[in-house]
Image (cartoon, rainbow, N blue to C red; front, side):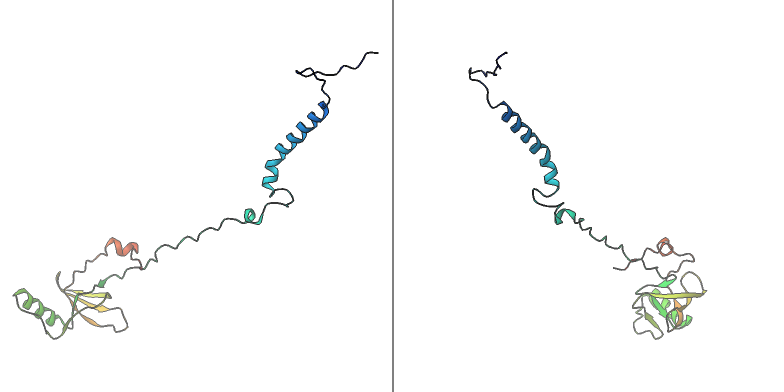
Length: 162
């Protein structure tokens, strides 16, 4: 029978712990390969991903865009002149055209806020008979420029509430 030969390392001493060395290598390899799985599962002794990992990130609510308010058309803007009669408007125009002061002219007033209107009649480019579309349904004459077609901004509804 042949005598069992022992492995000899570089120092000349026989190798007795070859099996243990291989076993330690296997255990180390298993530990290295399972480390990523344990990290995903929450580490040793934990079941599944942690609560922090399960929560979906909160999505911030998208702020709503500006509220689109359709523009009044036709309309009188703030500061426009509104006279009760055509004669009052003609008097106003004569006074301001000759350098006079229209202050205190009865029958005419300045509009304090935007006002929706309906055009009744035109008497040249600077005299237009109108009726307001509010509850008062006030009738009168204005010298405001009111084109026959609305501007692009009025047709596109570009007025926004701020």
